[in-house]
Picture 1: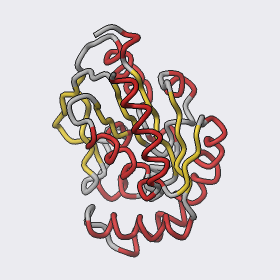
Picture 2 (picture 1 turned 30 degrees about the vertical axis):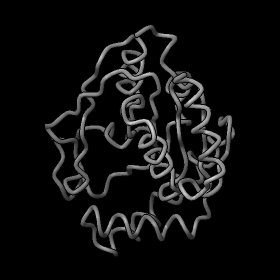
Picture 3 (picture 1 turned 30 degrees about the horizontal axis):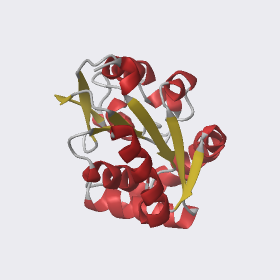
Picture 4 (picture 1 turned 120 degrees about the vertical axis):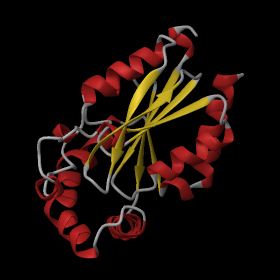
Length: 206
C-alpha cells in the first residue's frame, strides 16, 4: 500500500464528548477498509509506580501520553507496515503486557482527547475533527462510563474530574479545537455530520 493512499482522520474532543462513539460508528460502516486507533492505549507505562500512586497521576495532560510512539506507528501504517499497538488496562492504571496488531488500511481513524494538542501528531492527520459537547453532558457520560465499564468508584471519578479533567480540558483540550478543520457538535449523535464524513470516507475508498 503506497504512503499517499492512506488517509488519516484525527477525532479529538473532551472526555465524554462522543468522539469515540463517532469514530466507532464511522468504522462499523467500513470494517474491512478502516482501522481505528485509540489514543488511550498510548498512556505511558508506569511499572515502577505502585497502584495507589498510579491512581493519583494526571492522565489528562499531554505528558501522560507517548505521542512519539503514536506518531511512529502512524508513519509506519502510512508506509504500508503493520504495527503492534499497546493495550492500556484502566483498572490497573497501567499499560498491559498485551498488544493489538493493526494492519494498514486505506483510512485510519485516530481518537483521543489530546491528539490535536501535539504538533507532530497533528501533522500526521489529513483531516482534523473536534467534537464539541456541553460540559454537563460530558461529565455525566464520563461518570457512567468509568463506574460501569472501568469499575471505578463514583467518588474517585468526581475527584479526578475536579482535580485534573476539568482544568486540563480548559488548558489543553478546549484550545486545541482551533487546530481542527471541522468542529462537530454532539459527536456520535450528530447524524448530519456523520453522513458528511461517511461520504468523504466513501469517496476516498472509491
